[in-house]
Length: 295
Image (cartoon, rainbow, N blue to C red):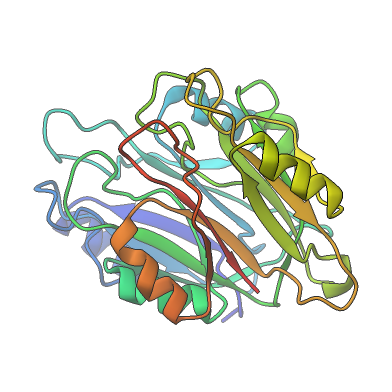
């Protein structure tokens, strides 16, 4: 058996579960529709020594998100992760990619969490989180997929987009999309954060920050930070929110980043050594969202 994951499937019913078992797949024992009233949905994986490793997992919850993934050669698992979860649910799909090169590190384990306490422990222990709640907009438990890679990775580049036009290029250039819209619940553009990984800590960024006004922007400029020139609240009229990054010799490298949409999870995250930047990326909306950084 290989040390990395080579195939991923999703089951929507008991018949599919039995079929995947006979095909040598292993299940993650957490219902991806937990408490949302939909079908029993499970994630399955396989490790085979004669197949290339999976290096990317992404989620799409609208057609535009899916276009860039498809154009970049990602493989769509054609099972709706919100199947049966109420009348207002929107289809959500999991995608994977088998890449190679400096920005691709094989995935050796995957897991699913349904509680913020378990999320924080995994993030604190070096796991990588898919930011999108699989029960997004349908209620139920907060469901997140996690992955652990065969080597420790670090964040070496960050970016943001306020349109879908460069998604294909970003994916092909080794970027990972943080699959939660920082304009969630507002009427502005879809805005997403992106990052690239390296296994070399010397190439890693050492700090990320958020500015929400001119004074903070001037302060970060004076301290040698570089802005990501996309307003994370684009077209909302709710103020300008920007991400800033810095690389300083001697400082601890950044190992992971994600966004957090639930206030009550903050204490669990901070208790596990995760830096939560207490500036709302979703300014002007009742839905708060914070950038989280693991060093």
